[in-house]
Image (cartoon, rainbow, N blue to C red; front, top):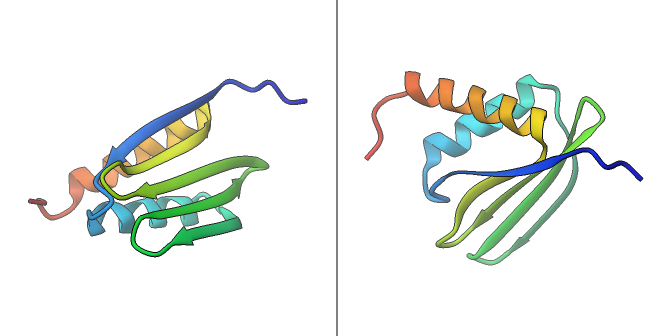
Length: 93
């Protein structure tokens, strides 16, 4: 069994469309391949993707926000890339 250290980072509001777009662009740029997608009407969405043979889980939950979970180095890389894109985006309310 793989005992790679894992991490979760809360990125922001589940209603932030610029955040969603930025996250989508980042994972596509990293060559992510969707492995699984689950959702329930209006309250929960989970996407599992494979990036460089590592699993990345993206959760969007009502009143909890958008978070990413996976190996520390991958989560840190995705988080930094998303923050970089957001810093260049149009100011959000």
